[in-house]
Length: 119
Image 1: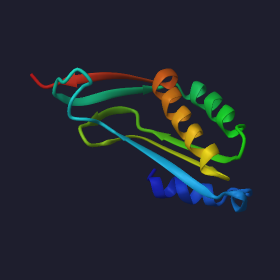
Image 2: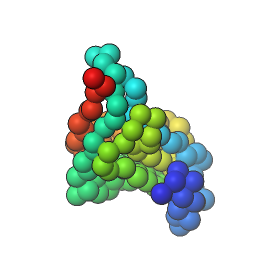
Image 3: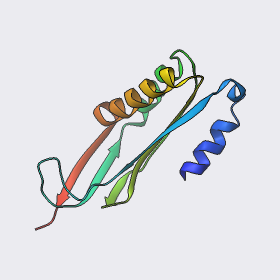
Image 4: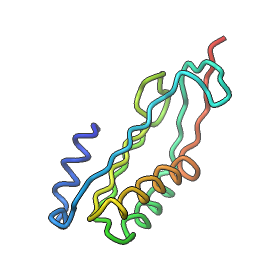
């Protein structure tokens, strides 16, 4: 799955003609942890059922036409993609908050990660 694949699927949505924008987030593996240690990579697990619930909630928000997410599971090296999130909607005042909420909820409720550090 590529980000372009996701955007192409969003454009095929029957309500896409109501969209005024699509905002995207691409999460990647950082070379350092929040506490400054050098990271080699991440192991990522995904709760697909929880993800589906969140997507349904986000798609029900005012002005939102579509929300698409692709999460990469397993081991990811530094600089590799971790997640793609795209939100299509009518105006930025509706789209940007849903994009941020979706990313935050995925990180808090859907994914579990284990960091691997350089020795």
